[in-house]
Image (cartoon, rainbow, N blue to C red; front, side, top):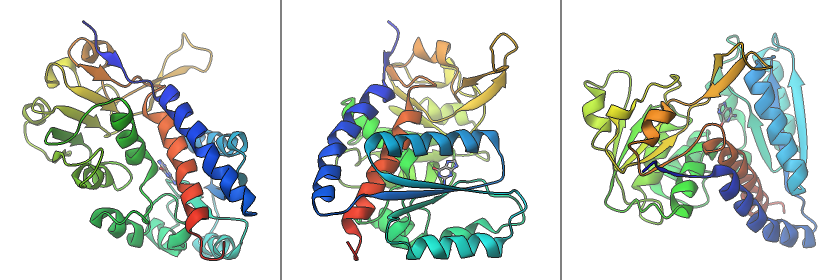
Length: 295
Ligand code: GUN
């Protein structure tokens, strides 16, 4: 029997509907949560993400600004913009879309974002808070979305072996921290695999829950999955396809057709993790507005 599909679009829609109550309550206190997204350069995937984030804010009734800067923007100019947004009372959340052009030191920029506005959860203060389980910390949107997918699909994590493939600071590492926490969507036994892991298949085959975030199209094949496992595919890779209007199509890091025959539950690409990432960014922006000291 093919695996049950985990529908990120439907779960994301439900979460956004729930969030409306909190947005209304903040509005009654005269607060409209506001998000600023900063895009440097013209990376097409980044431009698409930023556009989708802006639209999601509009649909949810949040204030938002998108600031687009040319590819040759200097680090000093970008830091000055971050300072301005840090001081802007209409803005509760700031997101600097990654990757940044090479002339800009990414960590210096991420550390300049005020921790109370860091809705990406990339500032070391929030990284630390998430690691120790402090709920005032901002959880990075993608792993937070994966955790919500698991919880809301009734996939119990307690005592189960979760294997994460990929150790990025955006997904793999914070994912491990969330799965280790003591609470819903946590209490797992966690293993993180990466490019230097030996015999990766022998590790992925032990996973009750397999989370793949390595950015390699269709890397995980059916024989790497334990029968009945829950498979969460974080990858979104453009592969050339001349039969489509755009000339490309999206595939995940998992070979879906094979994996679906082995797994117990699986996320599709698109329509799995992607919609959840944007939803969790909205949740974080609302959290920032709620926690904001000047509010
Ligand atoms: N680039 C890829 N994923 C992300 C993300 O979650 N946040 C930001 N700011 N940039 C990204």
